[in-house]
Image (cartoon, rainbow, N blue to C red; front, side):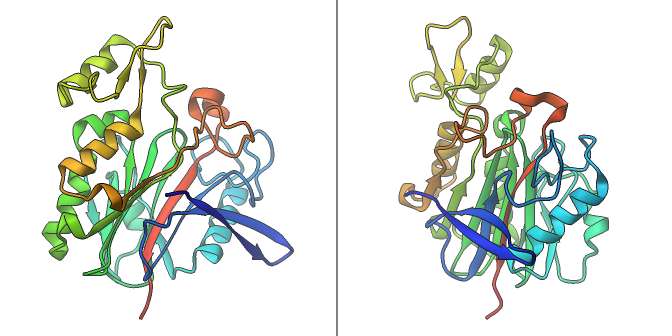
Length: 272
């Protein structure tokens, strides 16, 4: 499957593009942002959705307002991401500000109109949707959270709270750092091999002939989703690398350090 770009025309002739996946079924609003369509100035230009990097707060607030308009959701939720495995259930009466200060790396819900979002700048944003129950989840999956088990935690949270069967789930993995650029040291390799002993044989740890091996983060996450019970044909993964995309569409912490911004992935059950 190939993700497509949908352009949302906002007031003032502002175009905000979102990458959308054919894997996410009808009945859900979702998308992955790029750098385009925002109000931030360089070096954060333009749709920076992260407040912590030193960008002007008013610009970041405006960027979130634009994303909310483009997303077609009533309220957008986020959590304080810590590269762990915690998943929060979001309900209609929850205060987004209270949820935002809670530590978690995933959100789940089955209530219409509630947007679940995660913020990344090389990590993988993963969206899960169940057309049978209307439940969905958004996961923040960097390498630490991935080897710790955040992918399985997300699948398990949908089963626990909403009765979702893994084989009824669809998954979309948004832009992240690709195997082409994810050069790592031996301690990271050891962490992946500890989580998956056959990591080398399965193409997760790659010997490139360079000084350090590379990790295929999306490959490992796909294997984790399949191990959790998702059908391979229900998993879609973006091919874009946030670090070296030739068009410069994405933020990358590895490329820009603290001068980077953050992208978002979001999903919401649509009202019926």
